[in-house]
Image (cartoon, rainbow, N blue to C red; front, top):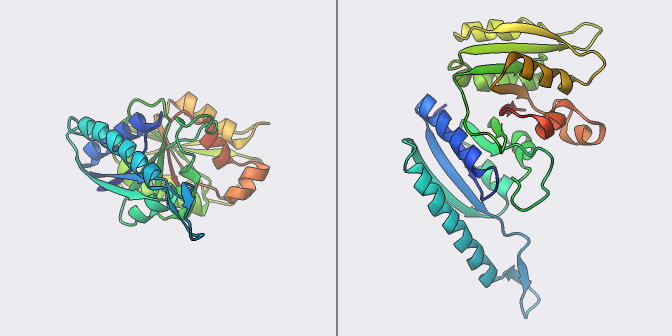
Amino acid sequence: MKMILLHIHDDKGADSRLQAACDIARACNAHVRCVQVTPMPSLMAADVYGGAGYAPSIAAELHEIADGFRHRVEAHLAHEDVAWDWVQMDGDSVAGLLAAAHLADLIVASLPEHGRATMQDPLPIVADLALGGRTPVLAVPAAARSLPIAGRAMVAWDGSEQSCAALRAAVPLLRLADHVDIVTVEEGGGTDFPATGAPEYLARHGVKARLHSWAKGDHPVECALREAIDTLGADWMVMGAFGHGRWRERIFGGVSHAMLRTARVPLLLAH
């Protein structure tokens, strides 16, 4: 991975995102592209001719706030010993980040966890980023202080197109991990995918991995994955995103939707 796109926004997850992006950049000798999107779509003011436009005073104030935060982030980056640049734009956060990510290898954003109760909570955009583009997304918990790439990685594997995409995207980082565990969750009735496919694929890329078959029992799959994370001591996890579609998961529940709300380790997601 050589181009890391970092979502810049002043919220409680800003420091954890920044540190994760810098940790990856150092480990991979990569470049960090800081993308700051100032949201403006809802700040419209009617003019005397019946048209509409941005209220200039509000836009100027928002830009001033954004510039202040930019100065703080740049001061931090000056001590991180990584290459970086800055992209500033106005508009919708998801659309702006996806547009900037066309030639990025990874987008670093924040886990939405339990929703956005205050303006300081991170924007819940991970699902839209994962589904809206072809660039994998690293979702970082707001409480994270670093991203131990060289630690223990866990891969959630079910043989789906989404899990295959996530596995392929994660190879550059999995090569740096000291331990890689692949976890398949036993749901009963057998499986219609080759569980050994993932370790065989990684072995061809020089990554040694252990395969675990995890019993689900009477609990949802996400409970088994969280148990595996705790038991194996995983520092970060790779998983496919929204194999059943985001809206179906939102209505009926699903693994991706649940893990985005409850995971306590960084998740590398791909759809």
